[in-house]
Length: 216
Ligand SMILES: [Cu+2]
Image 1 (cartoon, rainbow, N blue to C red):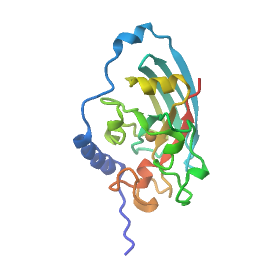
Image 2 (image 1 turned 90 degrees about the horizontal axis):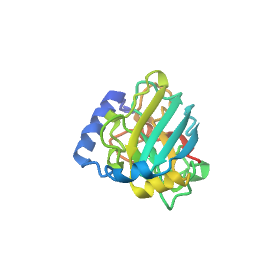
Image 3 (image 1 turned 90 degrees about the vertical axis):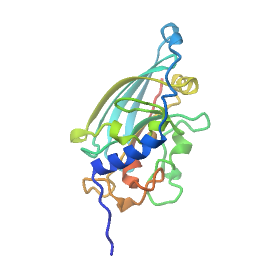
Image 4 (image 1 turned 30 degrees about the vertical axis):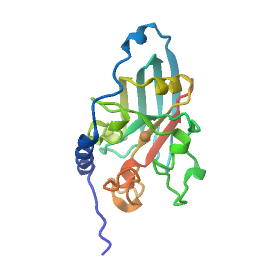
C-alpha cells in the first residue's frame, strides 16, 4: 500500500528539464549593456543560513553595475549529487528577509518555497550554470549545480531587469538555495509531499535549504 515513489536526482532533473523546455522562452533579461560601463559598482554580501534544518551554510556576494550582476556563492552541507535550484529573489512588496516559523502558514513545521515568498519575494534571477537566467528557468534543474560532496562554488555574470538591479543595489534582494532531504535518506522523494511549485516534483526538490539577505 504505502508505496512511496522514490525519484533519483537525475530522474527529477530530466522530468523538470523537459517540462521547462516547453515553458521557457527567449532570455528577456539580456540587453541594457550600454549603461554597464558608466555605472558605479555596488557590492552586497550575504551569510547563507539554513532553513528547514538542512544543515546548509555558506556565503554569497553580488556586485551590481547597472543591470549587470556579478554573482558568487559557496555553500556546504547540501544533499550531494542532487540538483539544487538557486535564485536571487526580490519583490518590491516583500519584507526583504529570510522566512521564519511564522511563515509556515500550514503549520507542518516545514517551509515551502511559496510560504517564503512574503519574506523574500518571487524569483528574480535563476542562477543557472549556463543559458537563460530569467525566472522562466527557475526550475531548470538540469542547469543547476548538483553539489558533488554536498558543496557548490559558483560564479557567473548575469543580466537582470532594472527593478531587480535596483533591489540588489538597495540591499533588498535575497539569495535562496533550494533542495532539502527532509528525511535524510540520500535522495529527493515524496516523503514530505508534492512540491507547491510543480506537483510532479517532490517538495524535497524545491523546498528552501538556505537563505541570506544580500546586504550592502
Ligand atoms: Cu528560489
